[in-house]
Length: 98
Length: 98
DNA sequence: ACTTACCGTAAGTGATAGCTAACAAAGACC
DNA sequence: GGTCTTTGTTAGCTATCACTTACGGTAAGT
Image (cartoon, rainbow over all chains, first blue to last red; front, side):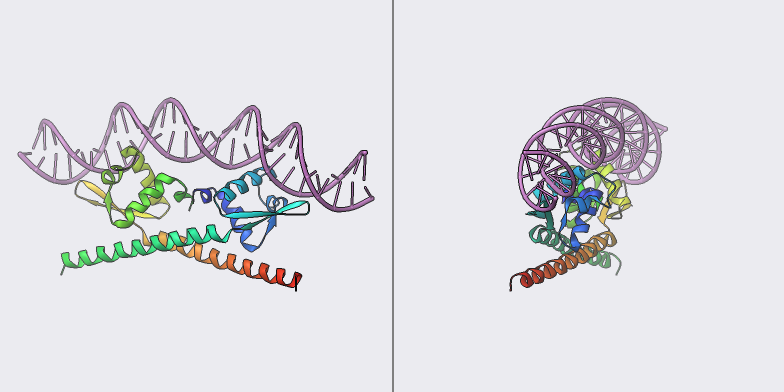
């Protein structure tokens, strides 16, 4: 969650949604250097959001389903809790002004 | 999205999921000072994630449904895109090794 | 074996962000 | 009116972070 706070990291993350990519391909089209992308990928990997596998000369990075599922579930729970809070708040207001 | 990158801000955000709260009540129980909470709330408000209304001496902060819905929709789209990518990747692998 | 391509890591730098302390403003209560 | 409470704002400091440059390592191609 903290890993997605940086805009550049989100850009990388969204880019990977279309499929696996090599580091150089990601850096191309981003306004930062390739080592910067490497460091961001390291952070995303430690956060469990991406996974990498070596293929020939390069390393292909892909999204990690488990990390995404984790965030997805987190926001689902949160969304429900917020809805309950709104509901009870609405009920209380209705009791105040009958 | 960037607003939820900070852990303290997420703590405030999760705290507000149980219902509206005043600034002092939020600061109580957090390891930061009250002005820090005020600044975080300002950021969250500018991000459209919380809304405030004055009640007597204090200001009650609540979650903004629109902001939450926005993030929820974002992750839903992202989740679907990622699933499509995984599906096509699996199909390609199956073609490679028949 | 040599070169080229691709990637990770270390060191260093500039900037941003979060925090505290101090002050100012507005309402409630005597 | 005076005091207390609650909150927003500012200045200043510190630490963290994102970035670039430079280097080393590995695999493919000649």
